[in-house]
Each structure stands twice: as C-alpha cells, then as structure tokens.
Length: 569
Image 1 (cartoon, rainbow, N blue to C red):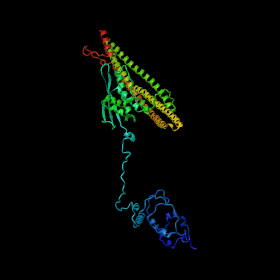
Image 2 (image 1 turned 135 degrees about the vertical axis):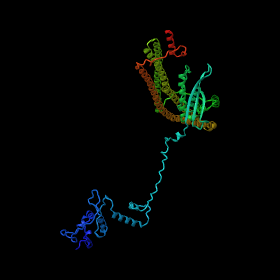
Image 3 (image 1 turned 60 degrees about the vertical axis):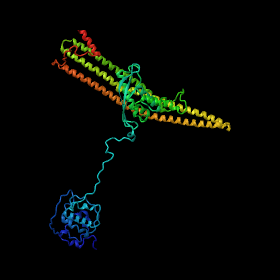
Image 4 (image 1 turned 90 degrees about the vertical axis):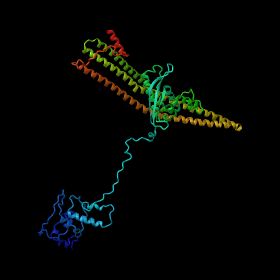
C-alpha cells in the first residue's frame, strides 16, 4: 500500500535543479522529507550534482544560510505539489527581499488592485520602492494654538477681575490757620477703576478730624467689620516733622486698606470722603437728613428696643472666647514690642547726638594741632563722625516708619476688633431683650384669652403686639448670627493681613539696617585707606578757611566749633 505522504512521480521527474534539497523546507517540516524512502533514490546511490549560480547575501545569525534567487522561484510551485505542511510561526525578516521576490510581491499587489479601489490606500505600502508616480500626502490638520496657554498673564477669578482697584496717596502736609486754630492739611489723591466715581483720578484736601469722622461712620454703617483705624491724637509736638511724616504714612495706609476691603469699598461715606470738594457742607447736610448718624446704637435701636444694659455678657461660643483671649495676649505683646522699639530708636538718636559731640571735639583738637600729619587725620575723623551721626538719625527715622508704624497700626486694629466684639455683645443683648418683651406680650395675651371675648378689641391689639415682638426677635436673632459669621471671616482676614504686613515690615527693617551698616563700613574703609597713604601728605590736606567767606551754620556742631575757635583766639 502506497504511503499517502510519499512523493508523487511528478516530483521525481523533475530535473536536477529541482532534486536539490530545499533548506527552507527542511527547516520548516523535517518530518515530510524523511516520511518515506520507497520513492526516493537510495542514499547509497550517488546523486548527480549540477552547479548552479547562487546569490550570497549577508545575514545575521540566520541558521538557514543565504537563499538564491532560483531557490526562491522554484519554491513557488512546491506548495501545490507537495503534501500539506503544518503551520509554522514566521521568523522575523532579517535580510532585504531579493529582486525575484520583490517582483512576485509587486505582481500580487497589482492583482489585488484589480478589485474595488481602496479608499485608505493600504496597498500602497507594498510598492513603496516602486516608481509608481508621485504619492499625495494625507491631509494634516493644522495645529491650533491653545487658548489656555496663549495668555502670559496669570489667571484671576471673576470676583477679583470685577473688583475695583484703588491707589490712594496722602501727601503734601502743610500747616494752615492762626495760632488758635492751626492744623495740618493733607492732599488725598485717588486713582481708581471703579465706575461709581465721576473721574478715574481726583484729589481733595482733608485734615485729621475728617479721617476720624470716616472711621467712626464706617464702624457705625458696618457692624461686625474690622475698620482700619486712624493714628491716635497727640496734643504735644503735633507739628514736628517726624510726627507729621509718621501720621501721614499711617493715614495713607488706613485709606488703602479701607479701599481694599470688599465691603467698605462700596460704602457711600467712603465715596463722599474721597471725592467731595465741599466735604464739610456735605457732611452737615447728611447729618441733618440722618440725625442718628454716627451713633453705633442706631443699628440696633431700629428694632425699637433699648440696647443699653448693665448685665454682664458671658460668651457662649468657645471660638470667640479663644479669639478674645488671643487678642488680649497679642495686644500686650505688641505694646511691649513697641516700647522696646521706642527705646532702641531713642538709643540710636542718642548715639547720633554723641557722634556729633565727638566730631566737634575732634575738630577742636585738629585746630590746635600744628603738625599737618596729625591735624589732617583728626579733621577727617571729625567729618566721618558727622556722617555717622546722619546715618544714625536716618536709621532711627526709618525704623519707626517701616516697623514701628506696623506695630502701632495693629495695636489700633486690635482695638477696632474689640469694638466689633462690643457691637456683637450689644446685638446679643438686644436679642434677649426682644425675647423678654415677647414673653411679656404673650403673658398679656394669655391673660386676655382666659377672660373670654369680653375684651375683643384689647385682644386684637395684644395679638398685633405679639406679632410685632416676634418679628423683632427674629430680626435681632438674624442680626446676631450674621454678625457672628461676618466676624469670623473678618478675623481670618485680620490674621492673613497681619502675617503679610509683619513679614514685609521685618524684611524692610532688615534691609534698612544692612544698608546703613554697609554705608558705615564703606566710610570707615575709605578713612583707613587714607591713613595707610602715609607718604602722601596731601591726603588729609585742608585749605585754610578765610574768615567771613562762609556764614556760620546754626547746627549744634557748628556752634561748638565756633566757640572753640573763639576760645583758641
């Protein structure tokens, strides 16, 4: 019986080229080649070998070796003549395709193109190396720039974008009035983007009591809000230059913080203060229209309840109790810090005065010294001490204007916070007074109801009074709750601004101290370099001063020098 897997006669009738063993089939299916020996010549019979040209190509670790073009072309007819071959996993192609194989692939691709057209041009990849004409590139959508990254400015919220900006400067302080009514007038210049003002930039004249009126009015109009307060009054020395400058800076900071507050910036009285050219007349007209303006109890007395009470307030909310204890401790610490700051500033001014006296003594010594090699350095050291005096004076002033003004401001702000606590206590008392009044009205109502319908008119009146008392209780309770929520947000805002202001103040204080020390070091180094130049006697040379060529100064140092010159004569 013939083996079904044996080779047919057609396979044995092939020429010598086809009888040559195919390495690829031996590697793919070795069982097929050795399946039968009946139809194959015996291994003992010598086979006729015919030399045929082959193409050797470089391969990388291919166990099958190079394949010739004739071997590839002869294998094209074998699958139809040989037995079925088990499926084998394809090996990755490591060599370039021979020319005959490329022609076969091109023919197969052309046969596939005879079908319906391929809209996606998938078959074009088979003839990548074939010169079939120019190929149209696929359409590419142009990349559009992102709308998010196109802007270089940082994004802000809608609330911040709609919030008006204010830039307020207080300057040009000058004294006006006679001896009995003299006072300082300031120029308040405002730049704003708010649409509620007539112009974007304007300037008015204000005095200190106008700032005080603004603070009290804003506190009355906005119970529970921490209003930035103005600096305290001072009866003695209020026209000194240092005091006037520190007050000007404090008033400017007060207005900028008030205008930056989300609630206070919309107050009509702030607009009146910043914009009115006839401020005093407008304030009097406003007070005539609103007689209770400026009285803090008018907000609570609108309910028809007397807020004046002598009962002691006991805080029921632990959060407010802790904040009040914290504010008391903070106020004591800030007052102690301000006292130490004043002592340090006083010491700087004392050092400046001492440096001036030391300069005067050095100058006196240089005038009586006959040797120019000694009188010159002494006189130069005297001038250096004058510079040191000026540096100490300037640093003392800058310390108060940079760090001392912040300490004073937050001591006053704590007072403003405590005033808001007092307003909340008044709201609490008004609420409980309204509840007491309601209980009285309900007691009268129950008494009339027990009497029957004999006093129907009186009963209707009492019912109306009870309804009105209930309304007042409800309004007082809402006011107390609203003030509590508002004060929580205000205290959070107070804490954030405190951290920012003190951080900025400390940085400015340190920068000022560093600059002052650098200036002193530079002056001392210059003086030492002049001392090292001993060979040059003209380093400290001072030309003789002709009497009467320059008028005598009015400073303490000049007067001391003049007295020493007179005594030496």
